Image 1 (cartoon, rainbow, N blue to C red):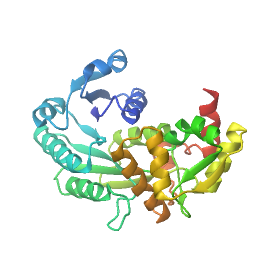
Image 2 (cartoon, one colour):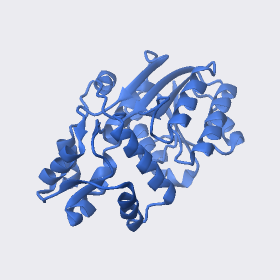
Image 3 (tube, rainbow, N blue to C red):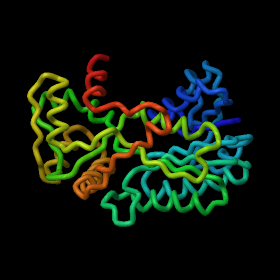
Amino acid sequence: MVINVTAATGQLGRKVVRELLDSSDEIVATVRSPDQATDLANRDVEIRRGDYDEPESLHNAFRSTDVLLLIPSIAPVERRVQQHFNALQAAKEAGVTRVVFAGFMAAEPNSKFHIAPYLLYAESKLRLSGLDWTILRDGMYLDPVADWIPDLVQMGRLPYPVDHGRVAYICRDDLARALAAACVGNSHSRELYKLTGPEAISMPELAEAISEATKKPIKFETVTEQEFVEICQAGNESEEMIQTLLSMYRAVENGEFEEVTTDVAMLTGKEPMPIHQFLESRLEV
């Protein structure tokens, strides 16, 4: 069986490919820039060029593919809609059997998260495409929290525009294992999985976990959206990313990331990593 992973040089896609190398399947990596995939090519992964914005490139990239793992780009929402259409159309024309879509939690009609309409469109379009499908909704990534630790230690605080709300954070390694497992075999046809961490924690609990891991005093502080914008601007975040983060934390406040499932363990046979263990492992690197 040929498994084709899109966005394979991204932080998540590359991890999925590495997980799939342990399977007996033939692995293909579809990337925009093949020169950035030499590490994968050196491990006998076939590299094909494919760009979501160039439909003709996708036709060639998806040829002879049995299972296509579709990882969305981080383009603006309007572009993502067209990219998703391009990818599904190319998959149908290439004779792909099953599409595994890496979506995101908060794919609900009344979500506060501003990319929710795209997520709903993407899932609906896939279900109605005539292709076999599997949908996985990724939980909120834990990795960016760890990346922010040096700044948090310097500030001595965790400033988020949230009063309430809990998040079942999950690390990319666990997501990659689950996505890879969903691509292998034929038992996940027309299934929807929600990939979350093992517990939903509040923002004060997150600050406490970071403080324990770093052995530095870090307190949670609720800030206004304007204050959060200024913090992000000081960190050179783009305006688009800032607006994404603001809407994401509105969704947190709305309880959209607090669901905890056992889907990761069911797919992989392994419990997802608790937040304390993840933070300690990152600080050891």
